[in-house]
Amino acid sequence: DSGVTQTPKHLITATGQRVTLRCSPRSGDLSVYWYQQSLDQGLQFLIQYYNGEERAKGNILERFSAQQFPDLHSELNLSSLELGDSALYFCASSVAALGSTDTQYFGPGTRLTVL
Amino acid sequence: AQSVSQHNHHVILSEAASLELGCNYSYGGTVNLFWYVQYPGQHLQLLLKYFSGDPLVKGIKGFEAEFIKSKFSFNLRKPSVQWSDTAEYFCAAVNNNDMRFGAGTRLTVKP
Image (cartoon, rainbow over all chains, first blue to last red; front, side):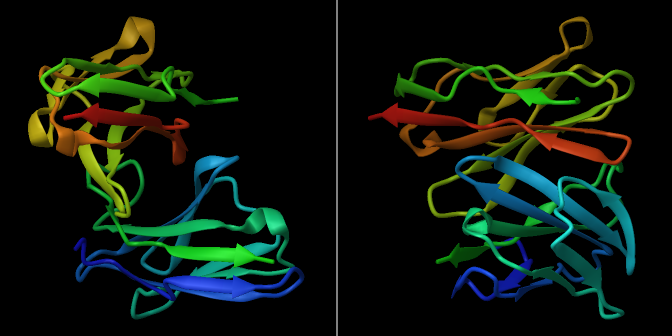
């Protein structure tokens, strides 16, 4: 158990819908990262927040957005869902920001299925 | 575009065989390098990381990796694999807040 929690574990929805994935970092970690893992795209870094502020952006689509709240939990919002958005979405946390020597600890992921 | 390449998609070994998984990156400048492992049904875990200093990095579970700057490589090695090493292995690189993963290598170790 990494100490990072993600809810829900599984999510099944239809095309065109909007969903919200939630992540709670390890106690004391200020950074939250979001990743997408799919069969065709592999593992991709989406976005990072550090202490409530966006710090780094990867291959995140315009239809996706994220935020980190004052209690440091983060939410990833996926809208206008397409079949290709079906994937495993991981969250990770670390004490400091990307580029530091800190280790990222990964959560168990949310499996999103878009029908 | 910056990228990370893993040459082997699927490697099958017998127990006690030696392992080397290739990883190359295309970043210039300072780069931080990682190897992650994903055991079946589990989340990603860090095996080892390189930021600076000794280019030979030792990680958990007997794994090590060597950073060769001239070859833009960070290959993962283990002298003797076990059945429990069956997993997917991902190489990753970070440069200026840009993080990329390789496509992953699936390792199957036969008992």
